[in-house]
Length: 637
Image (cartoon, rainbow, N blue to C red; front, side):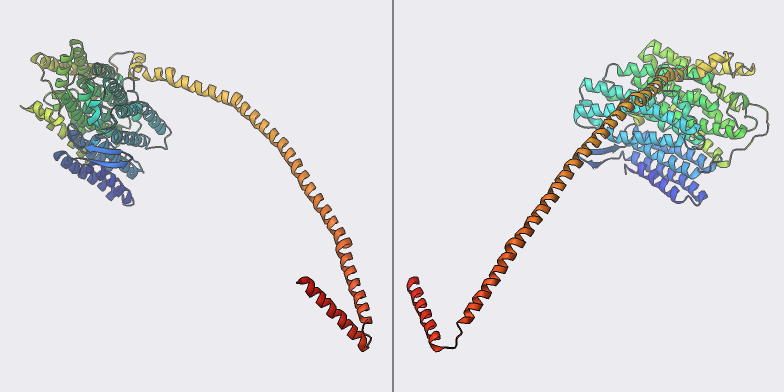
């Protein structure tokens, strides 16, 4: 049962592929596969299934649906069902919609494997599969040369962080002889520190934290459903998920909490400013993704993982809603420029649904996202006054940019002609996500914090009255400032000089710094190595090759001469032997034969003379013969 959340979408992708000739049926199959995955994940979570598969050579793939994994294993296919339903309804003019649906479905399977992993080997496999699938999805429209380039940039950036997983896995195995999460606690403090460092690096890269945040802008090259799924419950969620899952063990490392809090706080503030400065709707949402995951890391670093779980869940729901609505805006206006949208009058239903997501992003009560953000704020103040104030400032920014995005994208505007109205399936997908966002408000009911702690197997800290007043007051301030800026027509730029705004919107010059400090030096080094290869190494190689060729010719000549001399010597000896044999034959054998024949003839001639015909001659010879026989017999005796 524990493998069902992985194998159902895996098989579902194969079914979609088999039905590709009937596009309508294949689209329907993609949604059905996600619904079945939700049911399978729910069942696996209800029985807290565990298991393992022996790979060989002492390596086992251990999996379990326990702790926070019970929430995440269901959340992933729930979000995916809405996103894939949106994609199946509207292909964005994509002729390769079936391929997109197949890869999206397998993307879910890879993320589910990552979620149920109970050891570092399984985690590595899921982690790599998620990265590979995201590369294929971002570069889906490969005929546009910019798309594969953006996919490569996102892949390489996250791939650098993936090295941390390998370091962590190696350290765990070296320390314990095992790769299981359960054995991590037996590692020595030194090895545990290496594991913590590797996981922080991997999580920061995957969850788009500073300095890795700009890769999310590259990910915007993918189709809208890809952005919605990648930013909500899959790719970007992987980093925060693994830190939440292993925080109870990693918190033993003294610097783990402060480092994670520091990364999260810097990203929450920097990402909030990026979102305020961005004029592209999808990129603004991408900036808010980094900022929101920064808040989750603050909760993890302070030890209140249940607050991080709540924030991750709420964010997955409203962020997928916002991205899908951004896709509707793109179809309607043909642009994502916030200065040219204002679709509230033209698309009132979508404006309302987008507004629910924006209210959740801005942490407006009584939505569940407001509850979880207050829990994060309480944990931050518990860690220190400055951490609390920084988190409060990040919360103010989130309300401000959420109000800005709604007013500019779906605020009241001219009811001008739109290029295309959303289809029923698209609106349904938005409505499902908006409904779940509203339902999450049950956390405000008595016992909501206890429910969240049990679901997440972690801690949550209830905010004090002062913290609640501060949080709600900042929400009111953010909405008020955004409203007055909108009324005065200054909401797009906030009066910030264009160059300064471009610098902030481009992630504070991080891509430029990366290009100057890393990309360009590496590129120049590559050019120098190329020149060195051509002018030095190639000449050395040519010289060696020339010397080898010369020695080959010399040796060839020497060998040819030696072999020829041997052959000629053998031939001459053979001829000499043949000549000697001829002479022996002519002068020896032939002469002997002729002498023998001549002797036989003489003997015959002389024996013929004894044939006289006289009897006494014969008697005489007989007597002589008899004497000879007697003599010989006597001698032999």
